[in-house]
Length: 281
Ligand SMILES: NC(=O)c1ccc[n+]([C@@H]2O[C@H](COP(=O)([O-])OP(=O)(O)OC[C@H]3O[C@@H](n4cnc5c(N)ncnc54)[C@H](OP(=O)(O)O)[C@@H]3O)[C@@H](O)[C@H]2O)c1
Image (cartoon, rainbow, N blue to C red; front, side, top):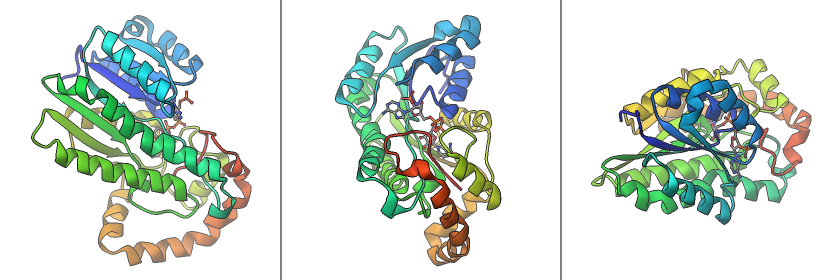
């Protein structure tokens, strides 16, 4: 889709990948409704954008709350540029042993990472369907394909979201709305705790810059690609895990002592409702 003059709703706009994606979208002439709970990083981003700041409108909203959904809908209705693209990038992570993860964190993870994008999609679909062409993008994760130790609730949410987007893309295949599942691998943002960063370094897991990820997301949005897995060897692992899961079982069994060692240093993992948690590989 040619993005010039197009309205784009982007949740998670205050985050590492989100901010980089706002820059990419704005450079293409899109008008961005930038959604986040924290306004400060969004205001700093606007200042940095200079005269392009006019293309961005901050929408302070919590996607995990019904009120937040309505605030986003209201902003879309009032947008001068008709909204044709919805990008779900808001998420909270969580790294640590399953038994030490608070139930409240598991619930918040499923609420923010799975339920919120589904409900927001449902709320905005009538607006999107009224456009000649529209796209709904889930920023997924390699961990939406590969169950990873220490990431049980995050994997549950991202696997669920992938299934939902696959079903949606098939349910709306004869419509003007396209659904996309675009999955980064580990990315250098505050999403990952120090423990996850250290674990990734020890396991030699590749970590991308948010700018590199945003550039690939933008290209996939422009081309309306239904699916994207960013990075080698993750592309291969995702396929292997689908076709020969026992091979990935064995590889992760080898890494388990290292991964488990970082559970104990990931003290934040037991603090619920924080967004600065982990995602790997
Ligand atoms: N970083 C990685 O290693 C990695 C790898 C693969 C996939 N991903 C995916 O990429 C996306 C962006 O991640 P990131 O690395 O940019 O993370 P990040 O820097 O931690 O940003 C997370 C974003 O989610 C927003 N958010 C969280 N809970 C929210 C809520 N209840 N309501 C509204 N906004 C909420 C945060 O905004 P506020 O705090 O302002 O509300 C922030 O903008 C996520 O979907 C993540 O799963 C990340």
